[in-house]
Length: 534
Image (cartoon, rainbow, N blue to C red; front, side, top):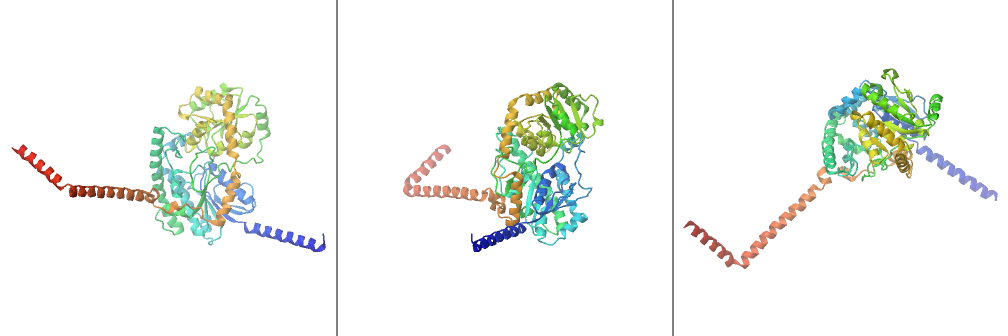
């Protein structure tokens, strides 16, 4: 190669490298994450996304209740230290669960929406609000009930990405131009499958048409906080949805509903599932390795204390543990001293358990769970079938959905017996179809063009570049326009008017063609009336 060609090649390579470096610099974003929920299970998903964005070189500020233990480059915590929001970690008792069952929607919105919005008054949040416009390239907000934080989009002049840690809640379907058809799309609070009976469709319809207006009504209470902290007057809280470019939703067709959605609803179910370097302790590793007859993993997640359940219920658990021996049981118990005496010898308890590492172990054959979405997605990822004892929220929906797919058995905690629980556990343990079915579902769950985390990162970056281009035109329509009531009303009016005109025209033509017959008719009628009067 001649010196001239060599120089040309080197120059070209240097130019390309320079362009690549410049391109990388240009794509580095400043991202704000707003996660005011006190539920650790929610932050498992949202925190995973923010950590990944930081690892990919973006600068992220994370507003929430759960700061990272070890510093991460490009990652800065803005901790909401407030008494208004309860942090739910290993502190939910059985009595709390019982109280939640009858929780009115007003209290539901107050606890998960209005009270977290009060955190806007904290000093570190006030500092955040004083940032100049354009300080952030994109803002990620958890969408559940604390929708006041959506006002940050206009306040800081940045596009917003919403994220939900459940499937898309009923009250967020319509505002984004979608139609929640109750004939085949179950409510977030329904345990029906998509193949519903008449009575299930009736119940689902009533549920959707009662819950959504209630939630929308009580959410309007956050307008005062938006005006107080942002100086912005709203006609409705739905005005804030116009600033949301898209929503990342914790669902996937393999586990959830098949339904038509606008392109700004992005399924990223399972983005928190990561095969990281989580390790078993030597003691736990040895115990699981020696569980040659199999092991049942039993936990109700990061919030619930099983030891606070009624003694009668715990005794049912004990009897089931004894009856499935020599299969072993590994159970998360925060306070072992609070358990009643008589814990069977095939059971091991622990305050904390590395869940992914446990589910990956070859001897773990069954997961007994309350049905939290994060934990059950991890079980599906590592192909461990389940027995579900749902407690509250979307757990009933999740477990019944898995039961419909034959990868779990759903039980009602309030009417279980030692027989029903033991039979369910043994059925899942010793029926190969449950393991086979969950292997198929797991394959579907991971078979995507991009991984869930790559998909989420892509759409965050896309929003920073393009804003609200995916917004459905349906969001600009009044509800009577969306359902074409004005069009159908016009068509019906035209049809009725046409029928009236045609009738008048036919009557006119008839009288014009047969005037004598018309006169004779009246004459005969008059004659008949005259005879009757005689």
